[in-house]
Amino acid sequence: MTEATGVFERYPGSAVDEAVGPDGTLHEGYAPVAPALEELGGVGLASVVGEMGRERRARGVVFGTFVDGELQELPFPMDPLPRVVTGTDWAHLSRGVEQRTRALNAFLADAYRPVGRRRGDTRDTRPEAVQAGVVPEWLVTRSPGYRAAAASLAVPGQQRVTVAGLDLLHGRDGWVVLEDNLRVPSGLGYAIVNRDSSRTALPQLFDGMSLPEPHEAVAVLHAALADAAPPACTGTPQVALLTDGPVNTAWFEHRLLAEAMGVPIATPDTLWATPAGGVAVEVDGERVPVDVLYRRFDEDELAAHLNPTGTPLDVLLGEAVRAGRLALANVPGNGVADDKATYCHVPAMIRFYLGEEPVLDTVPTWVLADPGDHAAVRDRLHELVVKPVDGYGGQGVVFGPTCSAAELAALAAEVAATPHRFVAQEPVDFSTVPTLVEGVVVPRRADLRVFAVAGSTTRVVPAPLTRVALEEGSLLVNSSRGGGSKDTWLLP
Image (cartoon, rainbow, N blue to C red; front, top):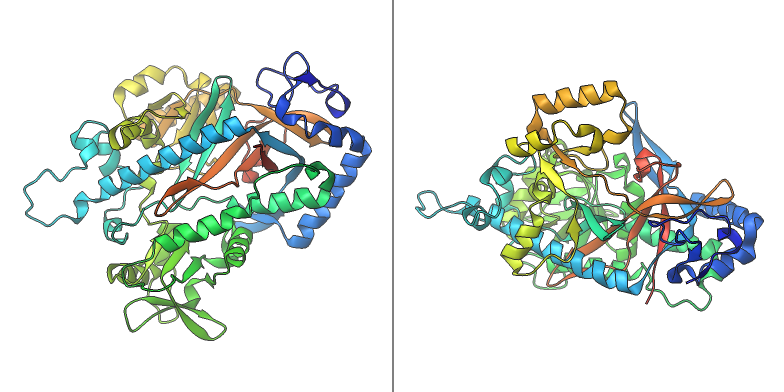
């Protein structure tokens, strides 16, 4: 470690800061970054912010958010200072995320296998994990994310999770998993474009650096999608990206990934049934048969969309999958595995399905559907983070320590009335990273979304997304809640 100087000279280091320790020393990982930032100084960094903003506006780097029921596109904020992840940390995270993804895929296969058994089968039809006492039966059958009809929506041998996005925090005792996103995880495209913006605005930072390129994720993603191809596919699989179009909050990312992979975009109004029982996407007036659809909008909305002949999308796609002519990635029904109530059982799943000890820690969690768990935390809501079981994107999360007395009373009443809708977690004192705010480098909280793809093998892609809270003291890193993002450096 070396003493922090230049832009870090007055930076308030701490025990949880990733760049500067409480004694004012600069952590080794940030040594390559500091000299270039010092050379730029405050004025230079301010010009970088302007240059980065212009570059991102020119490329249309935006995200969508609903305001009063209307979708608005906003610039996707990016801080110019990179977040540095050491080689040791990245190797640890990669092992842990791959392990967790394999276990969750095994759980999904187990959870949906019994539904497909013939009527009259006298064997115990409960999932093997339920029979073994690894998870309670209600966790599967009563989960808001469980879809019995989804049992027939995976082709033989297909991983139900092709793309996973796991959110991690760096706490005082190391990395912990905060949540699993297994339905339609977003952010991979933003991780890619953030590197482009950083390299354009701060080329001097990259002098002499040898870093994995987030663009490498594109080929890995495409290969995993191709691996999901159905039995009827005998040649090179044709992949398309399925989106509901400009009404989607991640429409920018959908276009970016489709273009990067060289695959067509499929919207409901461009999908047709083929005579062989599959589907085709209309591209420039020509109907192109599709083997794999990379699904990028909520499964609950499939039924609301019609193709040009008036067939609901869930019917069209379901028939093609059951005919062995189409694969959906991710497969619908994965909400049962990224349900907040399922989260605390994943370590046990890893031991049961894989015969391994968990690599990554989890946050202490109470499932309030369990009377014992509810009783244990009933009087501690002011100390805990309360989350809806089926929430995602930060929706409905309540930080007890920041609530007023009236807010806590309302929360306690809601939890008491419907405890099965919530989990409670211990707050994590997670790390801060250097962030440029109004021309000054200051610490701000950040998480890390790490993506894994599962095809013939399960592997992490070298394109994690750092999300950062831009307001002082804030714990909210979601872009829809005022957060921003960073380029993430993976050191050798």
